[in-house]
Image (cartoon, rainbow, N blue to C red; front, side, top):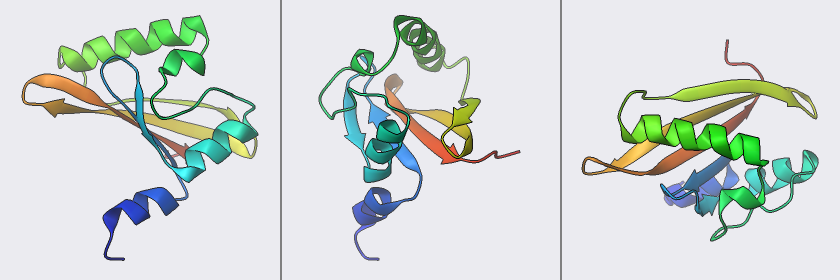
Length: 113
């Protein structure tokens, strides 16, 4: 595949990218499908993640993003029950120079252990 963006778009893993202010800048097709399967509405490029997360989840995300910004952690992950079994959610930061540029979230359908 010559176009790398097609790989991300067609990946069978949900990928969501957000900026440091929690605005969604990219979501692949599997992300939309999975959010639909989980009955979570509000995922949309250009919208803030607060539209698709509960307030207590946003509080946790704010703490994680701050730890990424302060470079206290390099990765964050958790597992949860999904429609077909375990979901493993991995958050990885990326940087613009020394500043947090955003976070890529990948949702793997299954356990990575």
